[in-house]
Length: 159
Image (spheres, rainbow, N blue to C red):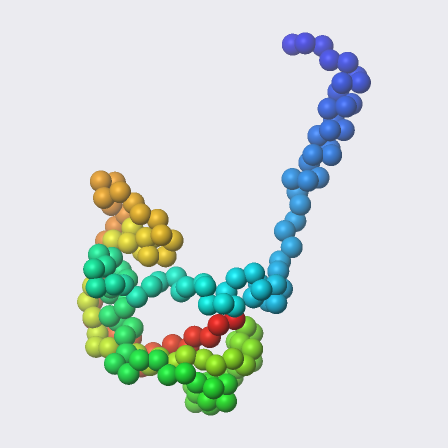
């Protein structure tokens, strides 16, 4: 092992101390206003699970779309109508800290119960965009029988 001088050891320690401080920088959380101005206020952020197209091969997204569909579609509520809808469900707007008085899209699910099967790799593909090779090992298959979401109310607002 080579012999090092005291000066070179001291310089190495000083350099390591300077560089160590930068690697331990603490991230600063953004405020709601900063987050809104970065991306999303323009509607460019899409929900994690998209409605599948007619040619979609993803059984997970197809099954969820069938389970959470509504024959009447979404209704746009004013802030006052949204507050009334929440009150009827025993809730208040104050329970949603990111709600800032904007219009809300409300969908009431009335689809019949559905049965569908999907592979866990389809969940990854739908939520993260990762596509796993079909030749790889199975991550497991799940079957939901008679999944019934009727009566579920879905509220969506931009923030």
